[in-house]
Length: 636
Image 1 (cartoon, one colour):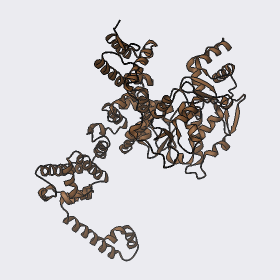
Image 2: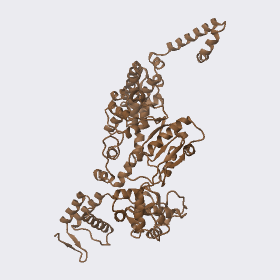
Image 3: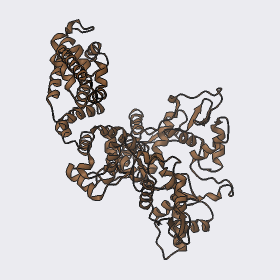
C-alpha cells in the first residue's frame, strides 16, 4: 500500500496511457479500501490528528508547554512519565485520550493530591483540542499559537487573545512596555529616560539619571549599555508573529534594503495607537525580520549613547535593514569607515575617488545577489550617511573642506600654549587669538575628542597633541588605566603595584599608589587580573603558574554614599563626637577622611543639596574633636 501511495501520480500517468487501465482501477480501489479499513480502526478523537493542519498542531504543542509550567513539579513529572518529551497532539492522544481510557492512579509517582490535578490537566487539554479542531479561521488559530509562544518567552505571562487577534507586533511591544515584561522596572525607567523609544521622549544625561534613581553614574552607564542586548533578547521572539507588513503598511520586506518612508512611520503609529519614534520602529522591524535581514549601522550612534563622537570610525546616522544575502556579499561597515577616513582629511578642492575601484575592495568574490542591486544599496547608504559627498556614475566626490574647522582653531591655540592645557585655558587662548569669533567650552571639548591628533590627559578635560608623546619629557596621554595597560603589554610577567606606581608617577605626579590600585579594580568588565603579593597582569595574557590569582572576594567594591553616611551616623551615636585622624583605628580614619571630603564638597557646591543638608545636620548636632588635646569641643 505504501508503494502505491508514494508513487500514485507516476503510475496513474503510466496506466492512463497504456492498455492496462483495468489494472490501475483495481489497484486504486484496493488502496482506497485499505485507507478506509485503517480509519475504521482509529477512534474518533484519533481521526482529528489526520484532519488538523500543521498550525493547529503547533497551537496544541505550545499549549501543553505553556500550561505544564504552571503545574507543580510532581504533576509535570507524572504527565511526562505518560507521554515522554513528545508533546505532539498525536502522541498525547495515543497515550492519554480520551481521558476515560487512562487510570490516573496507576501512573508512577501520582499521589492523592497529584491525581486530580493531572486528570484536570488532561481533561482541559481534551476540551482545548476539540476547540482548536473546530476553529477554521486561520488568523484566529494563529492568534492562539502566538499567545502561547509569547507566554513562554515572557515569564509564562497570559497574553489577552484580543491583543493577538490584531496580529500587530507594535501593539504587542506597547503591551510589553506597559506591563514591564520587556525589561525589569529599573532598567525600563533608565531606558525610557535615556533613549528615544517614544517620539516625544526627553533624554536625561547620566548624572541626572544617577540622581533620579539613586544610582552611581557607573551603574547608570552599565544599564544604558545593556539596552541593545536586552532589546534583542526581548524582541527576537516577535519574528514568530509573522505580521504582513506589506499589506498593512505597504513596506516591501523582500527588497534588498527595506526603506520606510515618513508617511509609513506615521501610518504605523496611527493604526496601532502608539507614539514610537522612527528609530525604535525600525529596530522593532529589524528584530521581527531577523530571519531575513541584518541591521547595518552602529546601534548606540543612532540612539546617541555617547555625547562625543568616535574619532577612529564613522558615526552612523541611521540603521539599515538589509537582506542577509546582501550583507554576506558586502562589508558595509568597513566600506563606510574607509570613506570616513578619506572624508575627514583636509581637501582644498573637491576630491574624486573612482567609485568601482573603491567599492569593489569590500565586495566578496562570490556574489550572492545581483551586482546592480549591490551598487544601488551602497549608493543609498553612502549618500544618506555622508553630507560631504556627491556621486556621479563613475566617481565618489568628496566636497572641499578647506575652510578653517573648529579643531584647527583649537590646534592653533594649543600650539601657542605649547603644553597640555585644560579646555578653559584653550578657550581663553582662542578668545585672545580670534576675538571676532565666539567659542563654546562644549564645542571645544567635543572637537578635541572627535578629531585625530589630540589626546585627553586623564578625565579632567585636559588635552594635548598626540605628537608630543615621546618628544616631551614625562608626557603620556590617556587615562591612568590606559597607561598601565600599555606598560603591562611591554612585559611577559605580572608587575608589582609598586613598580606600576613608580611608572605612572612619571606622567601623573599628583596620583598615589592607593588611588591607582582603586582605579584599576573598579571597572567591570576589568581587563586586569590581580595576584597575591600585589602583582597585576592583563586578562588577555597568559602568565606563569607560580602566580596565585586573588579570589573575587579580595577585589575592591565602591561603597554607596548612603552606606558610608549610615556608618558615620552609627559611629556618632556610639561615640557622640566626629571621628579623629588617629592611627589607632583604620575604620575611624576612613570615616574621618570621608567626612572631611564631604565638608569640602559642600563648601564647593559639588555635593547635591540633599546630601549637604544631611552633613550639615550632623555637624550641628554632634561636637567636633580637638586633635591635640583629644577633647570634645562643644557645638558652637
